Image 1: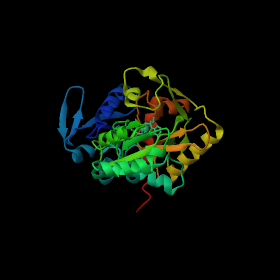
Image 2: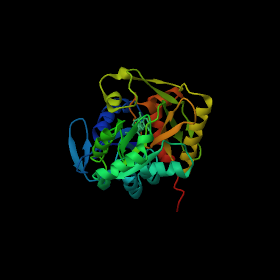
Image 3: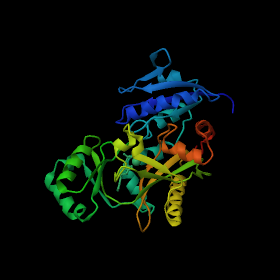
Image 4: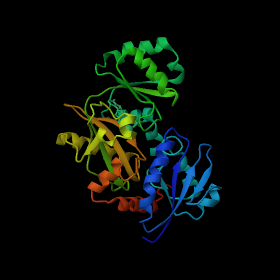
Length: 337
Ligand SMILES: Nc1ncnc2c1ncn2[C@@H]1O[C@H](COP(=O)(O)OP(=O)(O)O)[C@@H](O)[C@H]1O
Ligand SMILES: [Mg+2]
């Protein structure tokens, strides 16, 4: 592959802005070793494009700036970055980008829309109900939902903003009082909220890489919590104590569970025209089928993030992975005229 001018885009205005910036910082030294020219854009909280170089930060006009860019390497997370918005903009100006396209990004950024897809395709997923921001203020209605549904979920429940990420705004609770608080907390992040049955099980990630027509499955990765946590809370994800979680590859789950998760991942990848890469997360209970939790269209991409670790296990060293994603972005064919 000849040398390309690649624009790394990070930052943005979602709740995951800082996570994205931290990723870009970690990724930067590795890019120097690749055969491309990398330039950096930080999207500001007020949606400006800031070119970042070693010496300065300057506002640029995105349309002009993108004219001589061959590929955009997206390290954005959350609303505005992972939800089809930047993808649509880049499509409009004809700049190829890493990761899935507009439709898959929009659908899977939203945990409620994701549930609808799981249900439509018959994919096993935890029971749930949804609450709007207005309903979140209605104590009587929340109490009714508790009595009709959540009170029967013995292990408790998980409350999530529909378009959150990085576990922000997510709560695991087991009393009616805490559930009301959690719904209120989640409504600070989004005005649509998902309330899900808590599933006790092993958390497993399935990564895919490649074109929609020919994806490769990466080795499954199991999250092993070493500190008695029952879920991947923000502290475990981003806290300074990295020993709270470790990763086992491949996941230590029965073969039938691995087969099910891989089949689901491949089905989604082809059904929704994923291009580049994608990651699905599951919970595998002691008995019965795995349950699909979410689909990530832009995953953590630092060398110690789970997706690059799965790729490494598959034989793709970090630099090769980034190169491969750039190559996949470039080779994406426009199939709809
Ligand atoms: N239904 C559930 N049962 C048990 N744990 C869950 C459930 N849903 C989410 N979790 C835990 O919460 C974490 C964050 O939830 P997730 O749906 O992945 O949202 P995010 O987009 O914030 O990563 C998961 O990694 C998992 O550990
Ligand atoms: Mg998650």
